[in-house]
Length: 309
Image 1: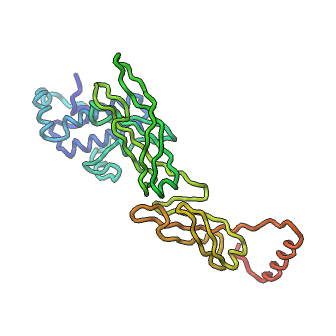
Image 2: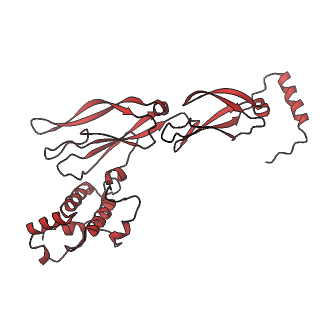
Image 3: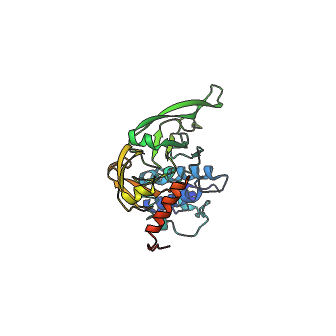
């Protein structure tokens, strides 16, 4: 007996709109190609999408029921894609799944290093979305920029075959763009199998920076080297930061790991983050006798100092 859309979602024809939505979310979470090892995951997701589109509200469900009058006379089959006995409603309050605006493509897409993945679209006439991670320098985040990326645009030839045409795209990077932010380029994803529009190309921003920089939200932590005497005596120095050349005052008796906060010099988002200058004391190498004697005198002066180790 052919499976109905109710069978595919594992629900009864009397299910409420909320139960339909819960079932859909559960199956998408379970069988999405980016989390499932099943080689037929994309096909299953397409079937799940089609079933949800037909049953997601009372009007569409009534139309489907009228076109399939034998549904209520059929014994309901177990959901063909289900492998868990947990009720669907257990997922309804998950912050990952969200509410009516839930978009599983944005949640489940796996972004590898410059790798693309594709997922079945909700609209069966539209091509699948394609996902790509792009590296963006931190300096571009501070000022806003345009970056060039190489991609492939699927086009259908007159003979019906698909050809991936290489294209170079210029992508606008807005000032203050965040790590992991998504940028959509319409109709540059996979081609439709039935003559519809291409899917979209979704870019995930990966901010690149020097090894002495750490990003925490909108805040930027930059480690800088200072000398022993700068740490002892304090000093005013200039540093090169993502925000440009900055004057930084080193307080006397500074220690490695001390942080100096420079307000509003982090990621220029809304609100702007802060720049934290993290101090690292670097001792010079002794290269002559005079330096050696100076260090011995310094040791003598501090011989009664107790050091916590």
